[in-house]
Length: 224
Length: 243
Image (cartoon, rainbow over all chains, first blue to last red):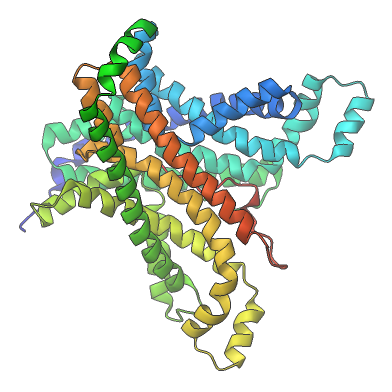
């Protein structure tokens, strides 16, 4: 084995990679917000919906939790056009990630619904709150506070998950690494640098979320 | 569209395609099993290395922690690419299956180490002290006193985590391991519609993962007699997820 590492050929691309990392964070943020809304709606339906609605929601959650995200996105990207829905790769990946994250976030928020004290809901009902108002003014503040560490972890996991967008040609961090690899053929250098990018990215994101949690919610929980 | 699906279904579920899909299914299962098995053993070793009672030598603990912290933060795809290019350099004629299995193992080691650590931490320190008073060495205390109590905390999350890894193995299709996802891509290229190719493997993955998850929750209920003392920290957090 005689391989000489030549990081010099790769350093000009560090900026390009950083821009890709920014895109990764954005995709993760979009998927997280969409997934959070899906999760909140589904968790509310599980809590208050009728038996059929509950069953449909459970089916959605169980299906998405038990199949790989990659194959889900493959299906959305390649099979949906057969049904007349043509999406570009960015949209397909984001929708896939949102639906996938939605399933996980439903599970998380269901735990949040379960942990609300009955008396709080009763009090809100006595005040004449509607279901929507209860969710908005009682459940949501509770969930955001209690589940903050779990939700933060989910965001960080999503940041790493965005790497599969590269498979569909989205130019986020890993996607750009693929391109640079095709241009320079310094594969090991590129992918080890990208690994470092992801490590730094997740550490920075954890630290930021931890600081936000401390500042906004006085939460001291550990964020992975 | 439905018309096309029903038209191609008999041809799609022909003998040779089923054989091909069956083999691919076994590859996915084997990849997960080998990777998780090696990964769990390695992760167990890492957890032992990280434990102050078992490893008094601090730098070893730091290294183990460093490994866990690093490998948990690299996406599976990127890790796969690193292992792929590094191993091809070191061992030119290595099989793609070995590369993928090693990636699964490297990633599983880091996550398992966390699960095992949570299990070991769930045991009250008095148990360690008592074992020490009985003149047991660290490893003997681990084997005879701590582990018998810790298994019930370690196994359920590890099982759920393994299901996550089964899903991650779909990414191994990127380097050409003929597992389920790759098989679907091949069938799609052969002219079958994407809906039926990917739809079928979605169902197959679902069967595999749902079966394993059901088994995991059965185990959790069986082992669930949680001991008094520290509650499990991650009760609200869903079982560790892979990327």
